[in-house]
Image 1 (cartoon, rainbow, N blue to C red):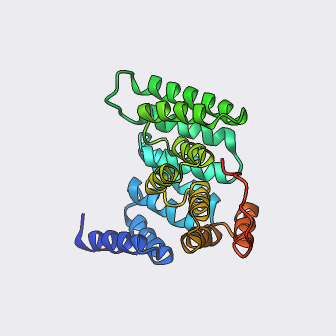
Image 2: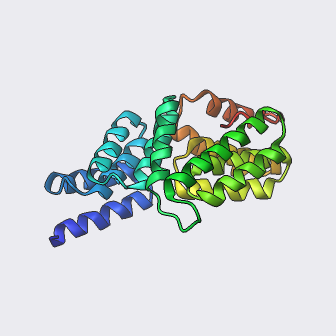
Image 3: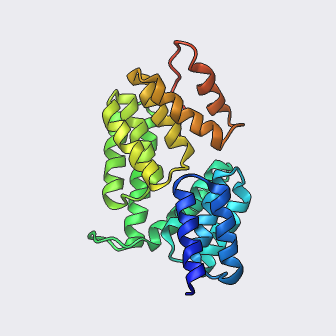
Amino acid sequence: MDIPTQQLIQRGKEAFARRDYVAALADFREILEKNPKFADIRHLMGLCLSFLGQPEAALEEFDRALELNEGYVEAHLNRAITLNELGRYDEAQESFERAGQHERTAGRFPAAISARLANAHASLGDLYMEAHAPADAAAQYRTALEMRPRFLDIRNKLGQALLQLGDLDGAEKELKGALEGNPRFLVARLNLGLVYYRKGDLDRATREWEQCRDQAPENPQVRAYIAMLGSSAVPHDHGD
């Protein structure tokens, strides 16, 4: 790899880290003009495009990254979250499952089996949530995460169950973990803002929800939470 390309990669990643996604995108595009087979740069381009409100373009980059590296777990996960945000839920679930199949684990079950078991426990947790039994749901989500700790959608669901149980510190920990895995996980950030709101920390709730508004200004739930900030009403839990 020549020095200019190395410098572009470093500069682009630094811009991404400081959330200057326009600058990062420009550097990544320049890199890919000469080196179109850099799967990690394709993935970073997808993240930039998603943050800039271009989910369809982001999906194209995630797909290209996966064409170059079918086992790229992060690309599968971010593709799944983007599909979920677009309302393409069946495709999103399939992408989550593919991520699980490729992720290596040191557990007692093969990767593909542990992914299926984790999803089964998560589905059972969803049923408990529908039955208004968040404690039972949380137990199922925890079992799922023991098998697949990088399944961020399940970590978000655990955070939501803990929120319903009034375990605000536990919910905060899980939702932060989901966002560490993917900072653009909109529903997890909405739920984290709700945790802060319930704690009475309106400044932190505002920061989280304003970041949600920057990411998805037309999202009705984002708009509702932002509008609610000026009132004393506590919003209901609508996060998925």
